[in-house]
Image 1 (cartoon, rainbow, N blue to C red):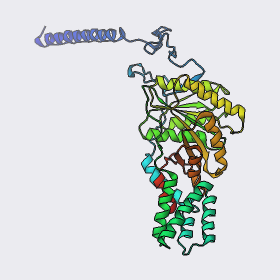
Image 2: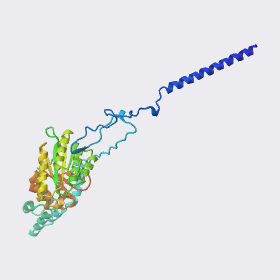
Image 3: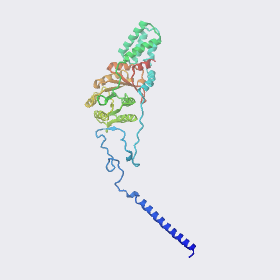
Image 4: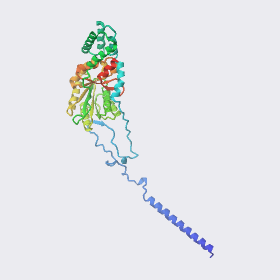
Length: 405
């Protein structure tokens, strides 16, 4: 055999060895990958994903309230390791940041100035027009009475102004404005305590109960009050004890959700309002909140049965906690007619403060003075519009300045 034939023989043998070795390597690689791969049908039927701490994938709801009322809260956070793509996700609504009370006072002052021309600008025009005869003073009295200042307060104000005119003689408009401002501020009485009980007391939440007749905007006022307190960084809980009006609890819950405040409400329509109020105070204590605001059903002051029920709500709450604030919501447009309502509510539940709504829709700003004198309690909040932040703490000097500027 020649040298060339020998070379070709060695090359053929080497090529054959390479083919054999390549096949073995490929087989080994296929075997290694297939030994660890799990096919979709290989998983046992009971091996579905479960959340930590649950049995067989069932959700654990033992920590939810089991009584007649429920708490509207956001779902508890879930560990990232337990999140599975197939599980539904919960959409958390955006939480609003309410306008601060200081900011809203500046904005509402302009609205108040436009609405109380009878008490302010009209009166100022009468007093600064020159010689004031008896007819002129009668016109001043009529203007004050029309503004619902009340007979007693009107007499005091007119007597004080007549004395100043008699002593100083006829004065220019700026001087008369100063006299009027001074006397009106004295009538509104800035010395009254207008603070809202909204901080924890002796390790418990402050309790506010809101009452009023039908149609005064009571539930809306509770929602707006929650916004005022949230703007002051208070931890608030709402109690939906208006169980007569079907939409009241839903309405209140919506107000709370907008600012991240939980609402404690009944699981059924027509529940005992006293029981719901009790649960709300208890729930607020467990949540270690700063304040709980109880919304009660609107009721006519001359319905004895309904007023007795309101008294029961108060007594049941007091079995668990003292009541720190009882706010009466009055519609400012009712004027003197609202004073009798205020008297009856005060007799039943002991009013500590007044909320005057719709003050922008009336020229009867004198009701502020009249209701304070009638009940001996201060106007603490005023409502001047339909917006969510159109409720503000009452500022006596700001109120007077707005109506005479």
